[in-house]
Image (tube, rainbow, N blue to C red; front, side, top):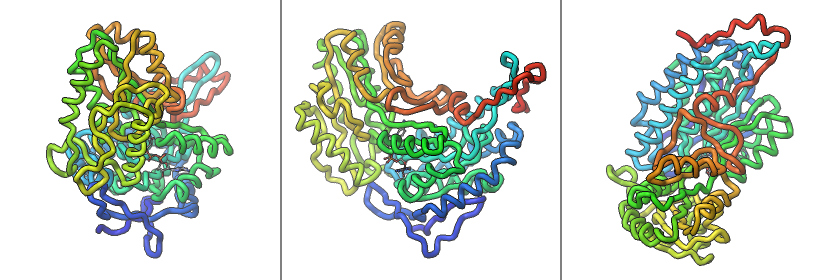
Length: 483
Ligand code: NAD
């Protein structure tokens, strides 16, 4: 087992002696692969004080220098790509190839898109009779989950740094080891001390005191809807700005002219990749009644390619879920679907002959809106097929959700697909298999969240806008990011 990792505060690794620790377990085999200190409110105080002290100088740092450092961070991720991928595989079970290409690759792409947004950003402009000046929000608390941990850290930390904010990051206690490598990279690139703090621990020990802290100006949170509600309530006590990226129950609408094989392949990839632990995964599919049997048959055949296995073996398509706890949650959803009368086509709750937190990729059909599997986020590889009679019914079914994160439309007529896409009450919609676009805004309608991440909108979340009235004539609109 590797040594215990302490918090990263004011550019230094804090002592670990005598501290409570959280073991990090490999979900493929239950082995301990590392440990971090279990932080508390005193650690949060120390970290917030460091971030507050570093804020004035960082806010005054020219954009060109902030961009230089964020680009150096991206280069650091590239330099450490293999180690980051191996660490992610060990702590949350993503297959190694996927961890390398998607988990780390997307994190690097996130930073590139954010840098592009920062370069294009107009810091001061004349509006009406005023000079409008964009300023950083201040000290940001960033709280992240375990499913795409590095991507979620970069969307928050990258954007906040470019905006001129300082950050206290609390990574998921399930998968914190990749964040420790980020701390090493921040030292390597010479980020000024105090600009980013990393405090390890769980929600009660670190998350809650961080959200409540009076010297934190903004909380950006990605995680479950339940904890998101708690964060919003707690942050409201001190009227903090809040950005929330929560769950989803996203629907793929298969139109009657859609190609069956391509739509099956695309929906299964969205639902099963990362072992179904993707917030924007297409976990419901709405199929025309006349196509339903053909679609089911093709889906059962395609599911056979998603064989669970050791995530360190090349060619493994699907690893374990991130923890034993997550496995129990997923199995409870599968049993609830069976109890509610959904028809099991493939998979199910039977254990696999594998040592870790594995679940079978599972497909239910005959799913109706009354069933829990139609409404509740599973966060595991479970697809629900619902048939529809008319396009109006398909749109009503797609929108019949408390969530509104993502969706998809499949059709051989792209314009028709776009018309349908525009009727969906979700923050993103993919047409004919188009996936995550880190240059475009990402976030949820309804109970999927507040605010946007990624690209220019994600960057702007970390800004305040000051109107200096009577100063419009003094606007020398400038892009100080220009090299
Ligand atoms: P979670 O809500 O349990 O935990 C998320 C983070 O919040 C962790 O760091 C956790 O320690 C912290 N936390 C827990 N209790 C807290 C509290 N009381 N106060 C402050 N922080 C607290 O979620 P998870 O299980 O880590 O991740 C899975 C969930 O995240 C899923 O529901 C998924 O849909 C959602 N998710 C959403 C997006 C998105 O962008 N919309 C992306 C990924 C994951």
